[in-house]
Length: 115
Length: 113
Image (cartoon, rainbow over all chains, first blue to last red; front, side):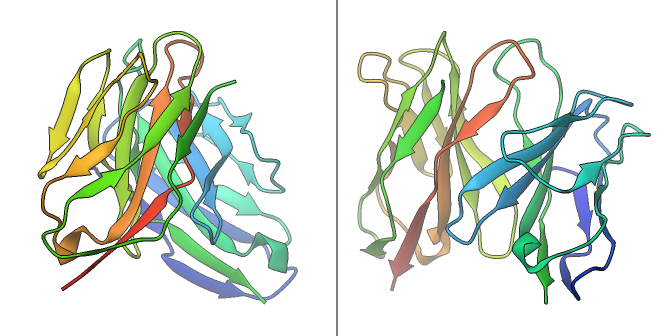
């Protein structure tokens, strides 16, 4: 079983609010990722990190920001939430194995609704 | 660039029916191939994987064979159960770089009693 946690699981918030979605993993993985999952189920990579103090933008442009101050923690922040940010956000981590065989472990997700 | 194409859903089957979900890919180099499953209200979890041509991944009665000649990795199960109802994602990862995973768009499976 993977040990990766996301809080909150569900969040309903008003437009303009600042929010932080938490993601933590206890596996000591170097790599962490944030995906946005649309209602059609498709996954879009929005941020990733190789390790502490490393963050990169993913394939889908996002107004969110991330930080990686500790190996186990990879929070995602929206400074001013808008209805277009309504989505499911999935956090994942993986251990660098030097090739293509390592597995990504996913958290349960945060379903965000912005009114 | 890399891409994964999987059959559109939803797929609706009766319990004990045979399941096939098609997946084909385009990639540079020699990717590893994965099937992930997402149960309602949960994140994705690895179902099975194969790392080289002709490898067969299997788990929980599901299996898929890495076919390099047809660039395919179709998911099969001989007898589905209601508890298999979920969304299934085919994915690939190529070596090097930051090991980006390319996911398919997902196929929703509904199994009815």
